[in-house]
Length: 178
Image 1 (tube, rainbow, N blue to C red):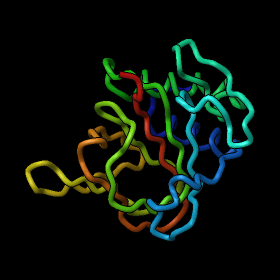
Image 2: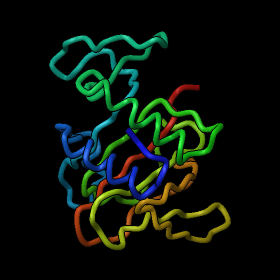
Image 3: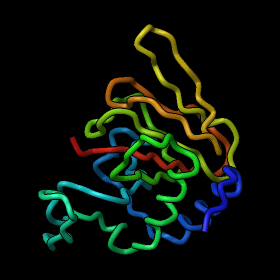
Image 4: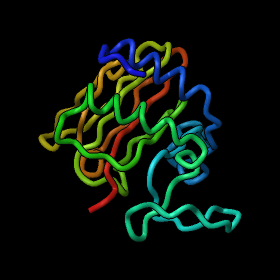
């Protein structure tokens, strides 16, 4: 599936996410600079036992945790994410979920459910769109994430996105289990 070459693997991931039917995240509307529900969906685990239509979710191997809709709809995508993290993220980094965003103009925020460091990578044909992180020492770092995984603790540090041109996708690998 993946090759170990970062640019090639990012293109393969892009090809795969474009095949998915991602949902509008109404709960993330306040974070979108356009004031609309962004295209943003989670692949992995959730504590939400039911969908909004009250249907039960599939249980995961972890008590009290359930599979997201994307994970039940696209189970084979797990292998792409596993291989990407094996090749391109730190060996000791463990993740439970991945947020997939499309053209999400995210406002300044801290992550609510993430535990520890998260890793973000940008894919797609776009220019600029850096992830801006406000560091604890008062400095600001502009991270170029296109085909370049960057890790930081989004639950402790404010972060947001710079304007961009083109089609910008991001994958945020994070852990939400204590």
